[in-house]
Image 1 (tube, rainbow over the protein chains, first blue to last red):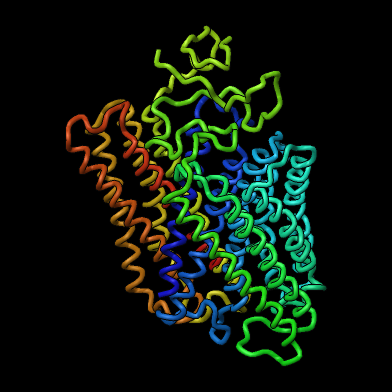
Image 2: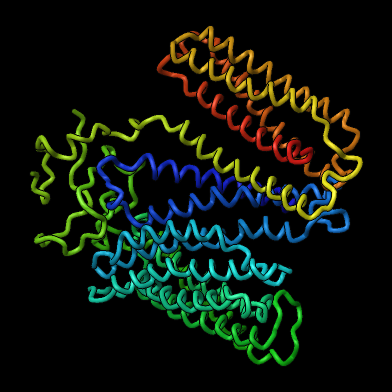
Length: 392
Length: 209
């Protein structure tokens, strides 16, 4: 049952990714050059290509597992000539790219939110665009770092340590790009921006944990301990969830036509930020002390730190309350949003809030890049387009 | 050039608007073939997972295929010849429709469907007469799983061809300028053929030589 449901959702992933790849590659408005496409679209392109290439291998592995469980085959049964590590290879070949699928769109959100709320052109547009593609490619060649303790031969551990360290570089490129974008910008500490900046710090912590885990000699000591749990919650919660919150605060006015309450947004941010650190930072220490993952009970020596984590988790639980109340209340009664409450320059802000069906009756004509703040003598910034195509 | 702070409809001879022939979102190119090609790229990675499984399991087994589950060569070779030739036949059908000859296209596609059906018949015959089943040993697991999934894809391809033949009964449905369905069925059929060539190499050539 589980297998069938994963195959179903995997199929939906592939179909969605197919749609996005074809749309981005072939259905850009003709006047939009590749260098004028918003970085969020570059991120989705990389995500979709990665999904297309990695998800089918999971499907294959799950089919084999289904047959082993239900139809008497022995692909993964060593007594009958099968290979258990084979399952791990098929599983992780997808599941490592899966984590990039979870973070690449978030990086795209960051590249949209930061220039707008710092009112500054993005630093290193091409570098950030290409780094998304680099993560897509290199990310297909690192999966064995989840299998350092599976009897993997030494040469394989060496190769995948190196490739894992390499895959951290494009992400570093992005982090530097965003920091450079913030530098000297006219920063508005809106809730969206707070979460974006929060992500920067959170993801660096999580990423550094990932770099240490990617080195086989260190991983041998902390594999299957809470060190790993600490790492991936920093990148998943401090990365993906913070980024989703930033995106929601940024695009809620566009989607609903209402503004979210900024004060409660700040409360939400403060609680989330503190809660995340309190919950997940001590886990690194727990792992180093040897507390294993996936256990119902732990040795009493780990109790004190676990209690800190629990307190942090309670803070996180409380943190969603202002967010949900804010979202629901603002959707119903919030102040009406204008077309472009953040004075952003990308195409979505030229539509009404919320946009009409099909967005534009006549396709816009793109005349310049999406982050061109302060790049001309104009006193009023113009969006990516002010012209519309006219039938001739 | 246009003053960008006013939204006037004046268009100079060199403006982007003049170069834009696309006004509304209904007017875009037919992307169904591109979509199919992208999907097939993804699908080939699923088969890739099966191929990797086969090669890894083979690498870890001393005698391959194990005693009692050898492959036989006659029927699969005939089947290979039939399937590969059918790719040429279906291509003749594509050439025919590009010359606006629906009748010829129907002829070639019907022959392709027959060849595909014979291929599937040959596979069923193989399954019935091989002497070992899905669960006999790990080689048999791989053999039946890989050829089974391939056969499933052949069956889908057959349905696509039959679908084309059905739709072509309506006059004017397919023409030299409008035959996306025909092309898509052909591309899918070539995909099925290529996967078979790899399968044949892995399961038969590699085990006998």
